Amino acid sequence: MTDLPNYDRCREWMGARTKNGYGQRMVHRRAWLVHRWVWTQIHGPIPERMVVMHRCDNRACYRLSHLQLGTIADNQADMVAKGRSTSLLNQYYCHNGHVLDDVGMYHQRNGKRTCKACARQRDIRYLERRRRDGPTGV
Image 1 (spheres, rainbow, N blue to C red):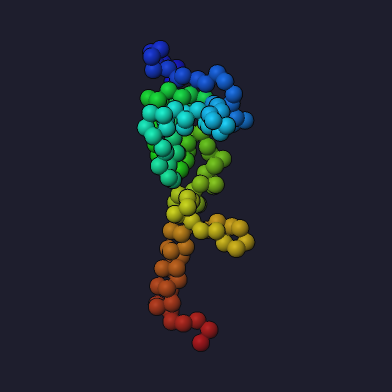
Image 2 (image 1 turned 180 degrees about the vertical axis):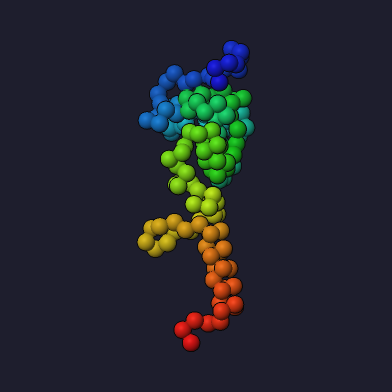
């Protein structure tokens, strides 16, 4: 966001930062990410399963007009859409493009993740084959 007037440019945290570049501060012996702390000061607690997203893609920015609430899936889709996370495509999306979040996937015993939508489609194809071809092995 470099072409914005001064009043709407990123307000970058000049204090401590995490290794990922997010502004960090201590409040009552608790470490806060600055953008989350600013959000809670104005809007109250962040709802469960929601994150505070940066519209400006600047992790150190804490200007309220550059922040918005979204789900983890929204944030990941935003990262991919803006080209910030091509290496994360396989981590957050299955090979068919379904979002792999808490709702869209399950973990197998061997630690692998399985897309629920793809598994459902695979099961439907299997059942259709069984109906069409009859039981196998008989």
